[in-house]
Length: 552
Image (cartoon, rainbow, N blue to C red; front, side):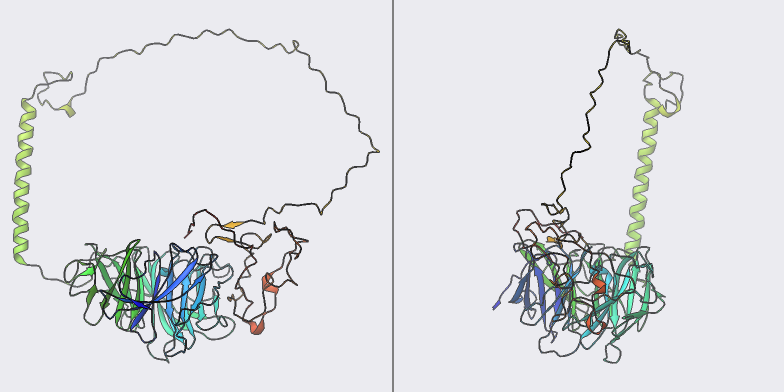
């Protein structure tokens, strides 16, 4: 149904434009419902009073977390009957993904085995074609061959088939990125060609031209050598928010007056980062705000408190903000950097007033200094200073103090104690007789053996791993292309009872019967695409009163 303002409130949601680019999908995990991903369609015809239509939801306590950062992406091609939206939830150990249709139906959450995408600030969309989109991401693991944490990603927005990650990406970006933003071609023939713009923590940046690949094996993306970004005196902060609008990348950051500053870069025209000058006020910058491009608008969502959130829009054609809570002045103040590379005229009256004010302050300081020195010369010498000291200055003469000896404590007299080794006789312990004919008890290996690995709790995602398998399965070889689980494919070794190392007659504690290690990578897969990894073997969920924690 459609309702009026207020909009749903989520701590770390994500936004995606609908297929017609006239409304916004809002997805977030409810703070009151553990593991419940909710979706809404928001009409911004009146940005001050948006219309909200609630869509579907999905409950998955193993996947969805309230405070985990998320990003949403619209279906790459122009038309699709279900208008799918890809939702990605980032984390230090696992990154969960799901496809949502226009009516709010979610597919089962999937993830790449042994690979997690760290943050939406280091996850850049650099191309699209048909059902696929390409990304460059920083991950939680260092590849042994490339010696890098960067990886190429290809995602299928309709099924899991063909979604791959591969560390062989060509040129390797910096290991200390601050924020990245992607751009890609605006036409069908150039859509899979883009740029990955990486800004580092040293105040610089590089533009890496990218090329997406559709082959089923091997590389999924290639980055060419990076080209330096002309920063124009701009310094970005760690809270900067990247936005991709096809050929142009935008970055939102905190301005000096606390408002939201906007910077842009269009690598097809220039490798210069420039500041966008606004014509009015801007919303206050919030590091937890989320943003997305819709047509030529930048749409932001800000949560003020646990009960209030609102939208703002920035029109890139008129350089003006709309919505609630606008602050600042027209033109805006400089951002966190020292400038934007452009010269500005300053009124002469302001310069003259500043000079006169400075002279008055200097004269006042000089008068107070001279007066203070005269008072010191006429002052009486104290604290044991010599009366012959003409300067009377404390720092020119040492202080004289009266020595007071400390009280000597009374000694404690203690009689010495001598140890006589002959005084005590230690009785020898009797020797126990060992009967060689005794038959020892036989150890029963089938006794109730407690499996200490049966209950390994992953505090980051409130999930129990497969009994006896440890918290994380062994990483696959670096040359292996990883893929998430496509629906309808063969089950993984952790799902197939015939190949499972755990007996169906195992006890409730999850004790393995004849455990053996099964290499997931050795399991055959169709068409060299990869084996499914939709779910892991888990114990049934048990309600708990413990609070949920998110580990970034």
